[in-house]
Amino acid sequence: MKPIRLVLLALLLTLLPDQASAAPSAIRLSATIEVPSGIRSLALSGETIALVGEGIHLISRDATSFDEAREVESKGRLFTKVIPSPEGFIAVGIAESSIATSSELPPDVINPDSIAVDTQVVQSLGLTMLVVTEFSTDGSLTRENLFDLKRPFVPSAIRLTSDRISVVGSISSESGIQGFFANITRVDGVISLQTFGSSDTNVNALATDRILYGSSGEQLVGSNRRGLRDGVIFYLDRNFKLTRVIRSFQASASREWNSVNGSHLAVGNVIVGSKREVAVTKFTSQGEPSWFLRVPGSDPHLIGSTLALVTNKKVAGIANFTPRASTAFFITLDTKKKGAFRSASVISARSIKDISPGLALIVDRSGRSQLVPFTP
Image 1 (cartoon, rainbow, N blue to C red):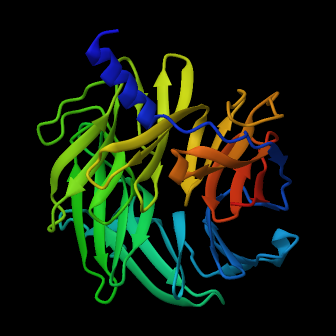
Image 2 (cartoon, rainbow, N blue to C red; image 1 turned 180 degrees about the vertical axis):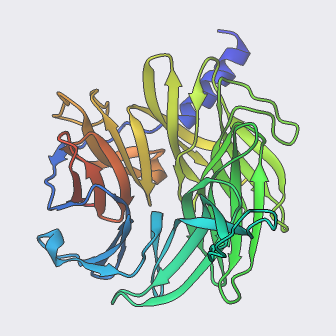
């Protein structure tokens, strides 16, 4: 074997996960509470669960029915993500903004009876308002900021530092979709907005407030697209300007990074033709891969070192279970052993909406939204 082939083989072996330990058996899970279909995200703070979507609801962790939930005042909001905070929770979403213009009755209009005519009002509406709502575990609103981004958008993730809230997502442009990053100061509610790309870029997650993860099908800061669509790590400077990107790509593949933790463990969809896989890669802060693995499936989520995904394929490394239909897997990874599986839990599901430590929000095969506890 040629020396260069030996080097490449050795490199590949260092990146692949350690499979020496015994494969864990799958533990079957059960749903505990059915929730309204409009719920999109959940978070835990102590013994309180926040459920957001078409409104905000709080429910005790030991509740047995959604009838026990309390509603938080949030009319006219559609929330897409919620996270815990030291004071309770922070939710991000969208609301309708309006621009009203009035025009008086023209002076040359014939009105012989001098009938009073109301001023005409023309109103333009659009889902362009970014909403950041902070609330306590008892349901009290503590702070809310609204910012008109002037264009339709969808926030996908939120991150809290001591004095700032960072929000990422996708925003419409004249030629397609851009990724966006919003930096918001908590005290005075000042927003700084940055957009990335021009027509085919998304930002899905934050490892820090200056290292973002997502995807792109276009050139970014001199970096050209390599596959059909590339998974992208975005690096921002101190002024939150994009300075460089690192691409994860494969010929004829559509890739993206859907979720990441603070240690740069990232998960994302890989689509090649009809084949769907989830990529799991541990990066350094500089974007160098330490190890990686692939799992058949889609719809990946990550919380800590727990990977969640949906598949109808057998997952190598999990013993005594072969799904017969669409199934949600919750797999705890051993990050010190290159992602070796430590434990695995399963439940029949069509999709996973969100995941928090020890609790998931799924859509079952009948289309019902359900809360599912699991052991992380």
